[in-house]
Image (tube, rainbow, N blue to C red):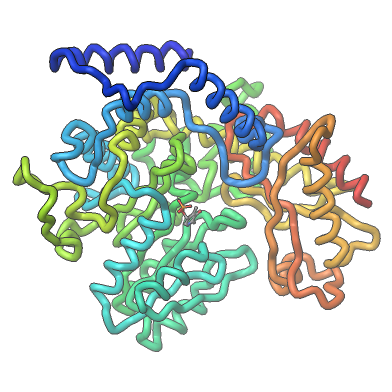
Length: 497
Ligand SMILES: *Cc1c(COP(=O)(O)O)cnc(C)c1O
């Protein structure tokens, strides 16, 4: 896709549209001499060149990647008009686009009916969900796992709602037993489940937590800001979606049993022998997503969008009553509900909706559409986990559930303080300015107890927490690059030793 050509086309269309309203003059106060613009623009360009290369597979650090060119073109095309989706008065065309993308997100979630809108971020979406939690259960608190995003604790504080962290199991998922114990005390009105924690990509067992919450009269909000689109990978691509999902294959590369139908040589599509074998993620938690009360999904994480695009959905349309307000400034041209009437935010870029709408025209929310963009990163994570199983330089921290892989350098002797120091050294060495073969990773600090639960043989030597390396393989380009990444990080770990 030639982005320059489509940006030109956006500008040209915009000019034609403007001309339809008759001639107008741009005010002289807005005039800028071309030379001055060129100089300032060059300066900006050089300032931006200090960024990390999020686009490149050698960047395997945080949850960052550029938007798809289609999202950029869609964003620019609408941004030239600069609609505001707060009210139909501000963005009649882009509000309609927002309603359509929310219908698509609701269908993916599994909601028959919904109330929803885009938000500036996952944080704002979660705030709205917890605000509704408080309005529905003013006398009860909110439970979230100890590994959930810090925003939940913070928003509970902001809302004046008691927050209850729930311990996690040995894989970083909310412990159902601990939740049940808490629910029995009657202090919880809403349970926040995270399907894809920001640190490890751990998926809380929604299918277990949901019935527990229901049994105690509690609601369930799902923070799927990071993981939401992985629902598209929870289907067995070898069988029609209507068929019952087969049992999730944890190791994922089954040896074909003698006499069983041989899948044949791996094709580009099926390499590395995983696609078409079974679902790429455990389908069980995702199967009940549509029964939960609210969901947050961030299209600016795995939906190919530029920042400024989160989404919140409520299963009960009547939730709108909690947002009701009047505005003396807006809501004039229509009796239809305005998006600002169901949200806590006021101004929101209509361009965000346009960008997502155009992207979803090209990458629909199906396994073959956007799912095919997420699948390579997931396969890469599984393959890396397999490769790390017997690696002399690196040790897998825990098996990935999505596309986030955590691992640590082997040290001699391997102790928690040495692991932390080596992880920091690998991080720094990989991204050193001017390094010949740079690699960009991130670290995650895990508690000593969490580390010990997974690696009991490693002495803690009094460490309170341990830094492990963390790689978010959220770009499809990570899959073909994986061996290079593995080699390079392994080499850095050897050097650190
Ligand atoms: C990223 C993230 C958030 C916060 O969303 P922002 O869009 O960064 O505001 C909340 N929860 C989870 C699980 C996340 O991964």
